[in-house]
Length: 264
Image 1 (cartoon, helix red, strand yellow):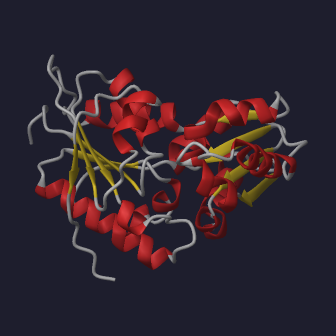
Image 2: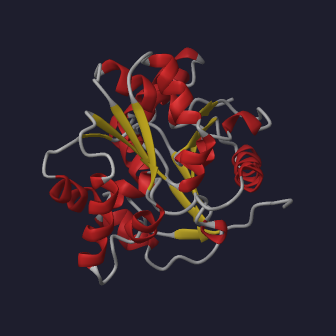
């Protein structure tokens, strides 16, 4: 496999661009092949079996496109990473997030994510293993996250209210893991609403660091001076280029409409 092959980055929509941006910044020689499964979003309310099939379809797509690794830039899809077919080496969100949280030695920890992520219990079990005896609570923020991906749209007051409800549910906890990349789309608003009450942990940087370790370990770290990025979606998303360029400073010149083979 070529060291200059792209890294596949998978999300249900645009939130995963936050992870792609971290990869582009921290591993500037790496080419990125981004896949936003807009056709099937949101993943949060879907069954684990459905999400697993979408992730396997993405895995097959990346392999067919010659990717050298797959980053699951979606917490809901990360909890079913063990159901992939093993076609590519994979970096998911949960492991790096839990490791980053453990390094902080928090007195207590909250997980904020989609209903699917919370219901899976994956974060709760991993945190219990990494931080024995540390109180852990997980809260689904589905309403806020549906607004967050598009930056809140025209109703910023509603976005702030929904984010405030998520944070109020875990006030008093030491650290909150932002276990959905859509939070990153509204990070400035989230920080303002939080007003320093909780330490917010965004796993995106930890994921990029884990990707570096994986590629180095397999001798696949690129030394290219001219990385090539591609951005693909499974259904039209007119806002994608502007959000990619404006909010995440990614070189999104064109967005390709592609199909993935989903069996469900």
